[in-house]
Length: 105
Image (cartoon, rainbow, N blue to C red; front, side):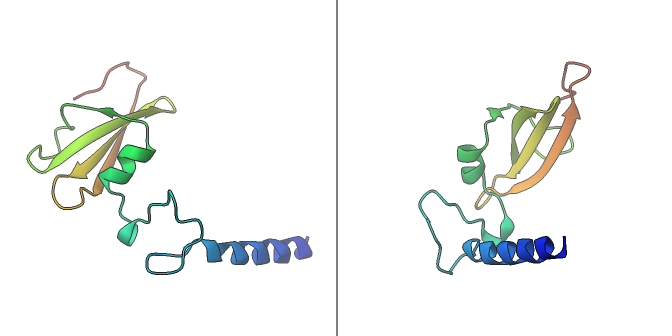
């Protein structure tokens, strides 16, 4: 069992070389979007996550500064809140259960 743990650790360490960050050599760069500072931008989200556009965000978010998109997965609705300025980064995710069959906003 100890040999398996050591082997797994070596495999993981070797694999980490493939996950280099911005400014470093990248393997297979085509189709890869590196997230600056770990921030997801709307342009990456739009291409990678199946979603629907929604007209309004939940009430606690200022409609003058954000816009929202929604996904439906695992019996839940997940509202992704993006800032309108700059790179339109992801600011929050608010999840709702769908037991009642409607969303409260």
